[in-house]
Image (cartoon, rainbow, N blue to C red; front, side, top):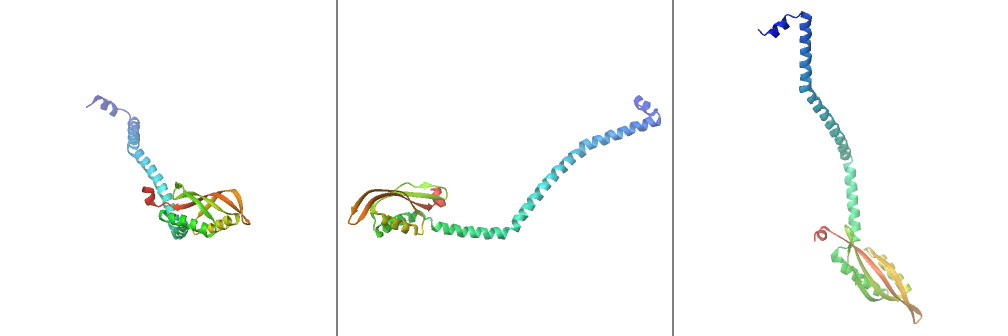
Length: 194
């Protein structure tokens, strides 16, 4: 037999029990370190994941509970968008809108000397379509023209009015007027890609 083992067996009983207890504690510690601690870490990670998923579930349940309200809001916004888009012409409607402006000007007694369209300015889902117009008319006629333009179903802004060269013709003062005319058009997906 091994001399070390013989020496160990000859030790008093309490020493052998102490050595055995120490070995059991060391084996239990090694088992805990190697097998149980990684599992406890996995359990901790899974608890955190469970908490995150539960919070996500609560949030999604709130959204699901409000789904009819969100659908109603969506339909309302869709209707508002349709109404707004009726005020924004598409690319095909711009020439007819500009022709309508010239017709309104003539109908209100204004002399359209020139109309100069300018390049579009993209603003995201819409584009500004500016132009400048030179008119000859009375002050009263330009006011009537502005009022008629304000009643159009489309959005048209008159800005930067310059009144100059007043002349008396008959019993009225006639002015040369330069102004900026800006309308807006809806930019659809086809326009964005092309």
